[in-house]
Length: 396
Image 1 (cartoon, rainbow, N blue to C red):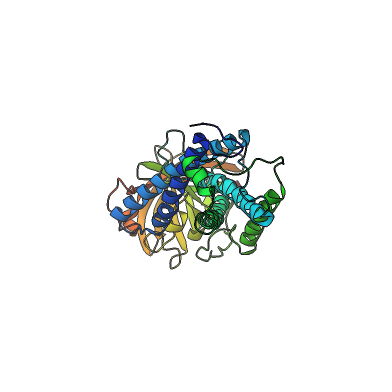
Image 2: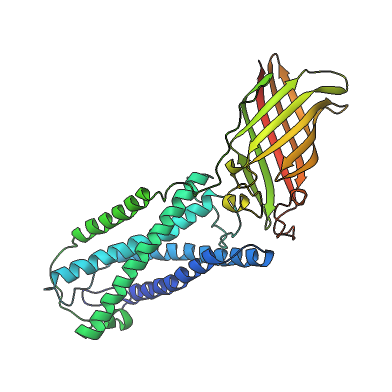
């Protein structure tokens, strides 16, 4: 048994790579859809969904490596001659489908891996090297684009696979030639002929990809998924104007820390520094809840079981700024999701003339606001949510 190809037969390496790839595809496609459609409203459902996605991603990385090995091997091997060289249109179509298969076998798993590397969330890849990719930033926009490419290219994979199978069946059932036997048993068939690799099928395959990506862009598939309407926050009438700042949260989901932030918020600040304990001012912070990004679970976090951004699009923190023996604190209440709870935010303050820089953090209990009530196990979703605030403001 020859390991390498000949001009009339496929070698053992080519055939092994072919059938291992076929097995991977047959596992990956249904597993991906089962994971995608699996519910996650309860702890048990979330655990199952995460496990399904972990297995899907892990096999996907293996399939990506296998596809690269198959392509590199094919480039070093002679391609067995077609059994019917006179059927030019048929051979052209077969070659085009092969280019589509090769490209989708790389792009489908790679785009899924890029999406995973660009975001945070559950369902880790089980390979020890699998979580990150070089040059892929942690970015929601990158993750969304990669997810769209992954979704679109899987359909091109399915289409090219169906055409490939249909062609194989035609050769076996109608033509009754040795095409399938060459890949199953390494049988020799056909007559070698001088020739060269045609690139017109490659051009057609590239055109198919361009049509797919262009159609997806026209349909808006490379933009963010629909989110609850973002409320328009009124400009803060403040003695201090915030020039830059971040309002972030962090929590632990299934043992992994996830960090997020709100893109739109305002702060109305009245403040006079003091050296002795006592009230130093007031602050009111308005937060646009739909602007939260939280890794791969952003959409879930805005849903009815969590922040319920559709019905409660804003949150308000109203507090007195108090100088204590230890430093400054904002002591007040946080109104979120229809509930008001007392909150104290200690912070460090640095003053430089009319410029103030502060950094503070506090911990909330999500159960106080009926956030994620269905997730009663802190091992799956931590009860504690840390709020981190950093800003720079100038006196008007």
